Length: 186
Image (tube, rainbow, N blue to C red; front, top):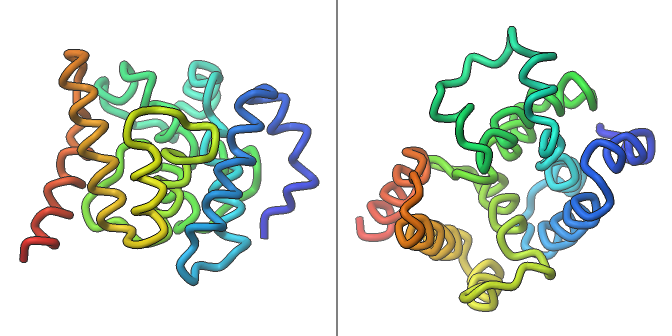
């Protein structure tokens, strides 16, 4: 399993002090939200979910043979790090567990039929204790009660915000929302 003590300094150096503190808070929130997922896997995904952030260009160049990304992903800085994250987690930090890599990959966009593990990392990132935006308290409350309701609430908020700011909505986000709505409404 991932030995955080071995990589702590590297991660802090790669993402900076502020982002490092964020991933620690995401880990803490993920452990609070956790619904019977292996604790070490939760910790690993939470700690590495932003491992490619701020170094996207460097990692795109370094791992270009693994980066068959669409222009839509490459041009969207808000999501690029999450798609690079599994590659960085694997080759820089030695993580090869597919569940962990998928939780890292989809922590920003979500996707159809997310696993509970993916939902926990997605939600922990969205509602860690330093997050402060309209609706975050309700999101935290929902996260402890029902993962699907919480993810749907978060996706709705993200989509509304992107529409209000006239920004592109990544298709996986819309698909994730629609999937949850179909599941909820039968």
